[in-house]
Image (cartoon, rainbow, N blue to C red; front, side, top):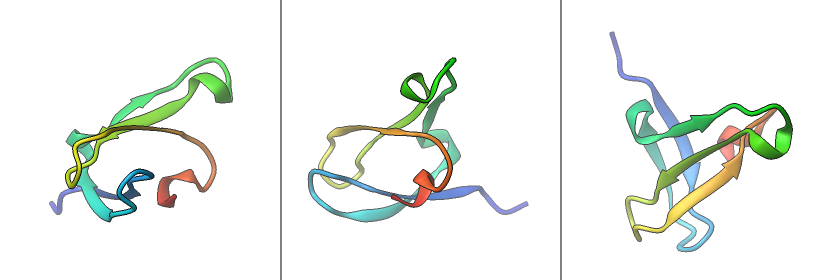
Length: 59
């Protein structure tokens, strides 16, 4: 089975990359404000948090 990869981008360094599912944290809350995904940028090391929802995975 092929590994699952997600496309992401860093708002600080503007780098775009693919991350393995294990590199992402998905938090599902009661509202859109508390539902997000986060990861550490592999290029610059900054912690990134973005809203999860319709179409936001390719941001």
